Length: 595
Image (cartoon, rainbow, N blue to C red; front, side):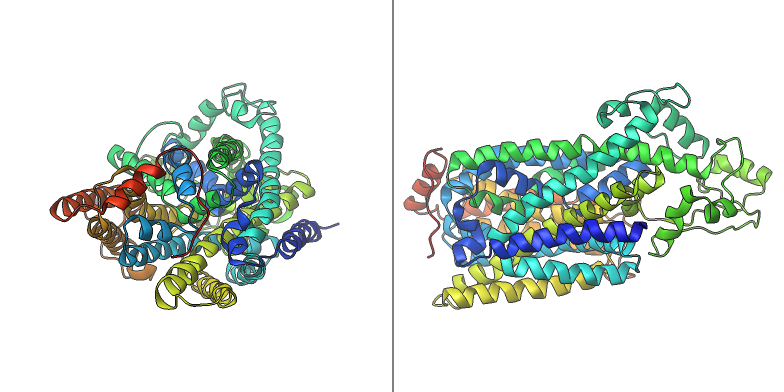
């Protein structure tokens, strides 16, 4: 049986399961559509949250970024995991106690203002749409490879699948689908990692294998990897090279952005009690840790294998020949990925070999001249393909490759569904029912939610064709927007009785506008290529801060402006201050109500 057929069996079988679950758990009421009827068990909700959380950025893109940068990109691990702890301890139980369906609804009631609710809707939609662009980028990469079509065709196929099960199922369907998706994606991530760890180090536990000994050379794996990459002119893998200020700001932006992301927060509205919200957060952290402890090993071992494939006789020997790439089954993955447009090479000096090295390093110039090299001939290696290509690079069995195909798609589609649900509930529940048409029937509200979701899919698919970066980088921008706009308002709403509606609205607008404009100045207006005013580098950026790290500054401006404006205006009414006091008492949980 060929690999394409195996992929179709795994992907088709998993999709049939997801769609069957979505139909079985089809939402029949707004409570089921928005909050799964508040009847989800904490362990199942923890699994669903894990799938919601481990997006294309975590599954497909993060290990690729770690592989090609090394230690400096461990910020993704620290920020996303630390942020989840922050969310579990400081936000989730209190928001569940408040008993609302959506984040804007909480903000509107806490700050006794429809204006605050509408601004929160805008913040939520901007952050969520940016996040969905990253997910659709991952969907395109995965479908493109495993259906052996172009990246764009893969993206369009993926959009149709997301539409099918997210639009009809609502939160109830999405929750139980995500439980299945978590099981698929965690198996798909860990099984290849175990195989590769055994191949390279003899240790079946990838995080331990990372610090083990390379069976080929007898040296510690990371020491050997450092030696290989520095011999090719790249930066040392295990040391810090980037600007420390940007590293700290970026990590903080990911942390507080995590705690402000509406699609994750919404998961805690689906459990029966406040205690269950805490337990489901704890279970989610366990399920997330399984992948996040494995990711550094996946990245390092993949970089090791890729470099060895291009230099099979070692750095001092000859590079791999074009004839070997074309004829050796061990290199078949290169031809397959080349079809997607995400991998490319060119024999610039006509010697019949592909030299892979860092041509930008001046220290490599002498060796290149001596050897007759005319530049790095691996002209395109998209970081997002690494995890999906990893089992092929390591020559693992076909069923493992098929499993990774299903896992990558599960990761991207599960988060896309959660985000689209957050967008649709913001439009139908907060904007239409909450403001424009308060007398809308339940059937009309469900229909408007599904239409909003469909429109969001179309926009995200279009922007996903020309994303502002790799999947994880695009997602990091969404975290920055959530960090600057939503997180400070939630924190002040729960822990400060003094912040009023005027302060909250001012803070959200200042944080959102500052962050979005700063991102557009560096990534292009509305992410349109060629419209950026500044290069997105430490040296070239406007304030010396890269766009992915600016969310922390936006959050500080949000906090500051909200507190200053609140001090200059009237205190919140006494009943609101009493409400804040009651939300912080960890007993009981209200039922969602409409006002």
